[in-house]
Image 1 (cartoon, helix red, strand yellow):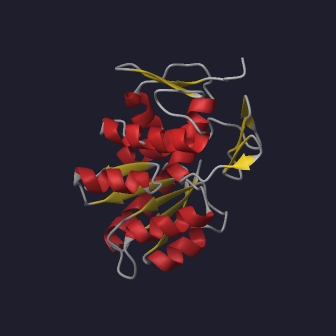
Image 2 (cartoon, one colour; image 1 turned 60 degrees about the horizontal axis):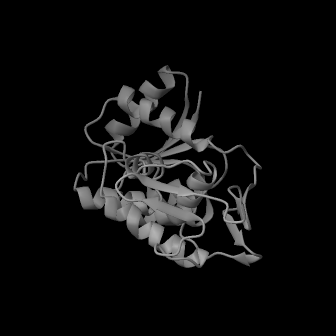
Image 3 (cartoon, helix red, strand yellow; image 1 turned 90 degrees about the vertical axis):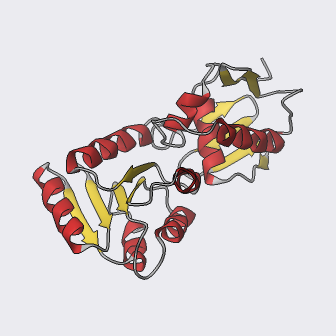
Length: 227
């Protein structure tokens, strides 16, 4: 059972989701406006947020950014917007998954279960150390040689995913599915751009790698350069 907050302005959808998800054993609260939803989302009372983008008082993308500024609670965006670039932009801004209307309660619940499973990949309080790199997923803190790295939320998530699988060669499709929550695939360029940002912060280049080693056409691995 999960505690779910639904931020959705259409009354019919709100009531339907509350009923269907409650029938499946979940504790569901619904709100119709973005600002109220943001306040409830960051309260710590919920396991996951289902967020519509077409809200009356504030666009859902901005609401997502405000939630992400103070909380890492999983967010599943559920909206009628189906443009691929919109989907990529929302996932890059911190959404954990994206469902396009119309969708069934069973479909949404499956996505919620998957997001909650993924959010448990790294245990609470677990610090990841690879060489001189130290990552704290709880505080979203990345430190290299005593220096705090300036990373976006998505870049940090990518670094944590790679570091928690030290030495494993990981393909871009897996990264898009697990970090960007795009199980259907997506643009490889998104991964490439974020890897470039990470290399810059880590003080390396693709031509002279230390932590991030890419095998063209296969994937990328993070290794301990001190070994």
